[in-house]
Length: 490
Image (cartoon, rainbow, N blue to C red; front, top):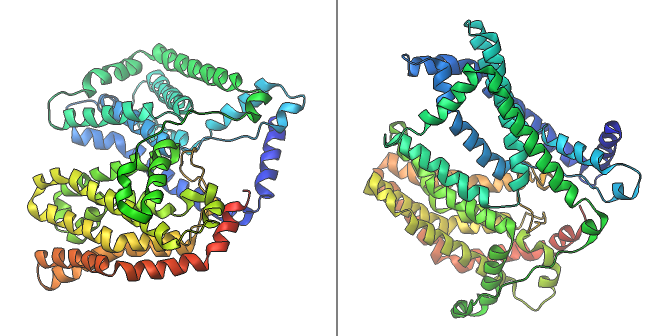
């Protein structure tokens, strides 16, 4: 039966209209997986020696156990945002004599083939081999390694359960940031008591039955959850939702573009994919902490300019790059109305501008790192408003992949939307701010670089009508190709 399922999926993939493009993407994904898997292998081998050098007075296995909680919390967050859960078209299978249990077991079994599960294997298997070479007890190491794998698979099935809920994000993200902050500032070493539990798993091999029991429990919960909705009536029936009305009358002050702005706000508020995009854009605010806290980047100002642009450009780059795909479900109806394309594009521009302004206000705490850094963030915000917004809208004209509003984006999903031209359009978003800052900085000084970067945004704002008119022409030229692409059944 498993062989038949695999045969059906291969035929579905091979006969799809995007087979050749999807095949190329999958080859690139395999190469990417091999690359990151190789890095994990080297990290796994080196973990023992890194831990021993960093804290020589503590046994490396104890050090690793003390920090394992951060690995699992990080893995949970990454899975929530990036893991693409397997999909199986079960409707045709419901009408033929195949046991439901068989189909559900196959579907759940596919989740174990995720790259995220193999990542833990690539990381902890070499580390366990190093432990054995160094003379650590075989039974202890083997049971500890199995416990890690059981916990990894448990997180896999936990993610399956909560994948359609934001609860995991609201719990895990603040928990992870809070634990890291407490540990970093020496307020409370949360890793120590949690590390005791993992050290106990190593010292008492028979306790490996606890992670195994957790894995079995989560598997059964998943099985029960899937089986509960595994009926033809549930598969074909439409869900009815109660829509809450929201007073957006204050948007009327924007004149003719107000209806579009209201539509976008409702779209973000009511649908899973736009909500996810908004949350991810909020995470961009913390991007500067990666660079501003490291002395090495102080000597690389072009990289700081790149980071400064990212801090206020999260929403612009995540939401803006999918214009007009956000409206793909009703784009044909939208284009049949007597609506000027200019108003449609201008409303998207204003939405991105407001998002950049809000991000800039929220970035105020970066003053802690100095006024020069905050000035760079302000210049990056002006660049995002004046130039990056128009580059993003122009790139959207080349994006003709529909977006399912109530389906969250996962890593490597919608691979048939791969567009090399879009990738080329994205390069100026990253290289232009670095060049605009670095050249004046090198020729004159730091302040001149910030000034030129800021003035580039001001120039873009002054020539707003010119840029929008040119972008409108691009959208108009590809209007019917976009409608046809959004209407195609993938």
